[in-house]
Length: 173
Image 1: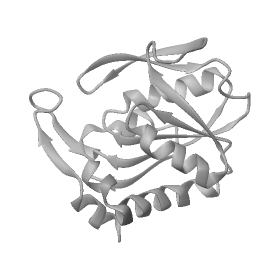
Image 2: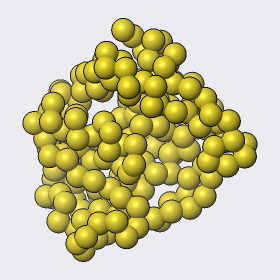
Image 3: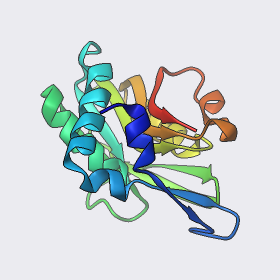
């Protein structure tokens, strides 16, 4: 198994969630046990040396990888969710994504000051979602050690928006 084989398991879905967008569907990769295990192991390799305290997962597909990575690293898992989905007091951050605007939230007590954090999501497009998550982590006093993605869409230049952070992506288009 290698990254090229993983790439072959990601299908393009045209005009989803709206016309003009080509959605990268990772569900075929997820249902393949060897591919999913390889992807998680490769993402974990990048994080091990960073001595991560918390893996922050971004709703919704970031939730697929982040708890598994937290388990593998012996770290805590912290969800960053869309507005109104967390049950306790939150910090908020508005952001722009490829096809709209949204608000992300994190519990105010999710991280201790100085905590070493890895932010994980499935895909880096324009970088707005990951940047909002990074700002939330920093608002709580956490240190963003890295932001990791299964897939990166290079042509959307999201890495530029995140230039002050260490970025890792397993598959690049």
